[in-house]
Image 1 (cartoon, helix red, strand yellow):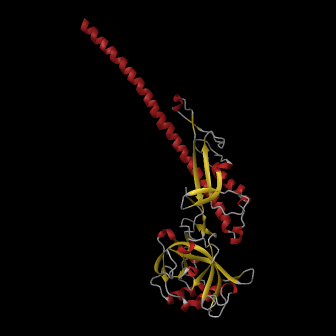
Image 2 (image 1 turned 180 degrees about the horizontal axis):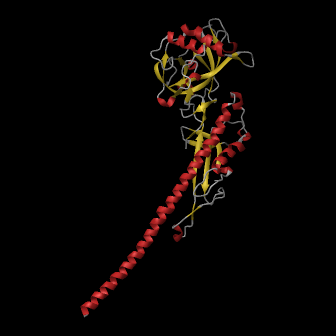
Image 3 (image 1 turned 60 degrees about the vertical axis):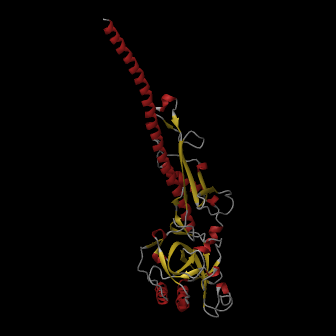
Length: 383
């Protein structure tokens, strides 16, 4: 009898311990559920906000790039972004309003969360424009979309499910994206007419808007070289044939593209182009137009090649970008050089080709190249 009583008491004790353990485990399970479900839901909502910020930043910067691509260099230098600030922010807001995050649709962006400014590629930093009342050419837009309780958010924080048990009723989340206009990486093959390239070395100092000589080459004043595009090997006869074909407007590559991100290499001739000078002069005459002063000029694109100096390039060299140039003079011995300068080759009357490089020009096309030369109107996400 005594043994039976002891056995019953033992069973009663075990049930009590089990109940305590089950109670503790229930709290643990609820805590795990709170972590898995509530934090997981917050992460899903943040991903939705990230997509909204990405799309809004790309759309706003794309509007800016499209606007720039229709401007002349002079118009760019005298551009006031304050004139278009409302339009840029309207585009970002319109994209956000068509999306939802955490079950809330028509996401609203606060004006202060749409920033217009500059992207510094080397340091990977964004700097908001400091003075909208001065001429400027911002190249980036940063957007933050929110589901939080801050004064900037009109969308409210997200509600929790299980974390309420611990007194956490809402969670705040936000996401930021920066889109920027970057260097032109892709162009139609038929748009690259003149077979000349500029060394990336020329762009390392601030030479934007400065004259450059495309012949003779080999120093900082003529930091360029001639190529036969992707053909191999290079020769003076090939160069003459290319110049003649380009003068006639013949292009069998319509719809095909040069893309510097696809390991693009051009074959440079080295030496001089004296034997092809007549063909170059004829090409210039074919495409040149009269400027406001009645002088002939031709604005076109040239390649930027991967050289660390200004020596005369020869052989297959990687192309790292494209730049807009205005050729302002092509002259033979005794002729006129740039804008009427006698001779055009240090006064010696040599065969000379002059041009001006426009680093701040924006052309229609996709960015994504290194920061050399012309910018592309189609932006990319940089942060």
